[in-house]
Amino acid sequence: MRPSRDGPAGGRRDAMDDGSSALQVRIGVQNVPKELVVDTAESADEVTDALSAALGDPNGVLVLKDRRSGRIVIPAARVGYLEISEDEQRNVGFGTQYA
Image (cartoon, rainbow, N blue to C red; front, top):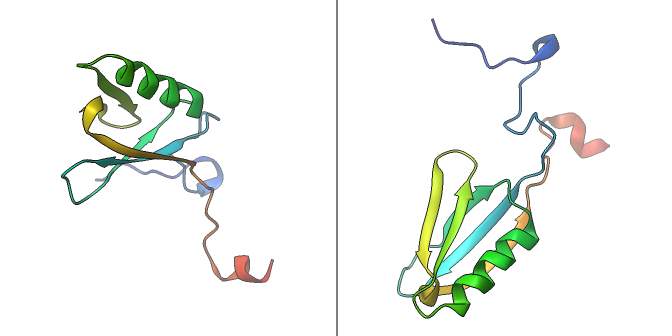
């Protein structure tokens, strides 16, 4: 039997039920064709500060905490770009297009 993911009143539970907001960070790494996408509970300022500190050290590494699996570690000298955006609450269903 599979465990139910239904929340109160039978509705689906979101991953961020604790009230914290999530950020999605897209990281372009030099000489890598695909970007990395990290969902993190850290704030945009914390991510920016972590990148600044990593770039300040000649052998610095950028470390981000992923919401699900742990840590993402990237050599700071190889970071091409960071795109930081807040996860949007997506509405699903036909009723949302008429609202």
